[in-house]
Length: 484
Ligand code: BG6
Image 1 (cartoon, rainbow, N blue to C red):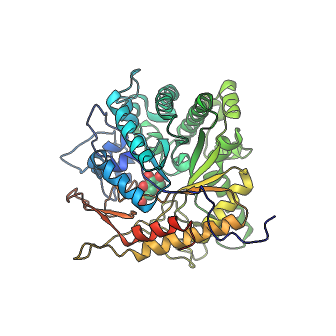
Image 2: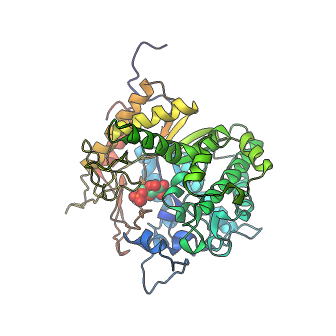
Image 3: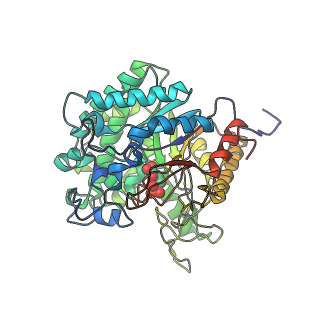
């Protein structure tokens, strides 16, 4: 046992930043890329409401809506400049995703699109030029649009084969240069948003939890197949899961709130991770199904699937952490938190972001302890950050001390967790360069260390500008988290 407290992050800690292809690349129809489901999601706060309406059928109507993902921040053409800026900050790693429809434009063809593969060759090589370790999410909230339209998304078992083909092509191509992978972004988010993570909308059955559950099962099998293939290629590859984690507190000591909170944790925070990390469905599954009116007889789950899931658990747990929530089933006096993405009631001890997400650094330390205590596998905070409106000053500066403060508190919380004995691999704050928001399709919801001159209407010079947080994060990395 070490008597001295840990005051800095370990050598080899993966400091970096995170993005997703559909939110920054743009070039949505270039070099053979097919449309993805995100290319059919309009910009603006009504994005989810539109996609959740009964008539939504993935139609792209450019006369009616703006589609900010089509342009992204044009990282497809600016990637060299962007990675240079990441290198200037001292990134040790860069988490990005591969646009499935750049590699398999329709998703169901057998031959990959070589131009798409070449783009990621260049992206990876550009990272390696600066000794930045690429960390790849195989599927980040997207799939080729055709798979959602023609096959009904992940509820269809055929998706396993299509994903397997995609995963094997990219693993084979890049594994000599890329050592860290994740199979699905925020796989558990289908509790709230099956549209992006499973390609399910009301027309294809998102209202019926049987479909959501079947989609998860198919994803678990697909994830196990990817782990299997990755380890066959190279045992040193690290391939993880990725979950959305929101620390949750009961509103008071009333046992009914305590029990409700326990169940919420078992379901939202742990259910998917249990399957992917422990290799089997948790004992709470039957209750979960019952509570969501799912008849287990209607699910297609084979013995062979279960063996695969058991044989190929993930190597590490990647997770996103933005906010905490409060469970209240007694509804005494708490008011609903407007905009807290994952629900719950107001926590009077916490401030919220401009979008109503409750800011809770201590919740991150709790998350790290809960996850490590449960699984004893290395953890990787692959998303965290503050979506905020930034003001560009007349002399082209962005004084984002609010963002620095948010990140500082969360880094301190991670240091606390290291002192609690947690095994933490790295930290990649979300949207290290401003990009299109996933939940609202806005550019004005900015997370980056780097400002991109682009507004919600898609106008702007696309110029990249270093924010104050850029210089701050540079120091953090250089000092291994001592100078914060
Ligand atoms: C995570 C997603 O849920 O949160 C990202 O993995 C997303 O894709 C991020 O962008 C922040 O959410 P938002 O809605 O503010 O973009």
